Length: 109
Ligand SMILES: [Zn+2]
Image 1 (cartoon, protein in one colour):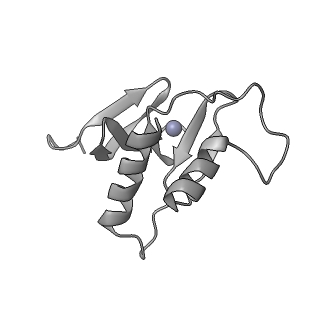
Image 2 (cartoon, rainbow, N blue to C red):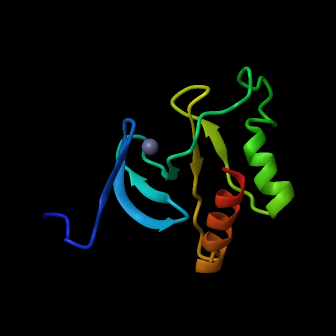
């Protein structure tokens, strides 16, 4: 089965997949390469080295949590300093949650 005309495939570096959502110049894709739904493009980490702690992975994840009250994993992928923001959608999430994330990304990136 082919892709419907309304669906758009987004490619970023080696990540590629159907666009699920779009806001603030960012796309959420269903990535065929890594299997995650994530935001692209996400700039490389500005940290000097990868975190050694499993409890602290990326400063950007803390900024989203403490400044915007948004809990979303930002993980090194495929390796530091490349990273991705993994969208973990659940039934209790609403469109306004993703709009809030888009606004936070626009403010922080
Ligand atoms: Zn990916």
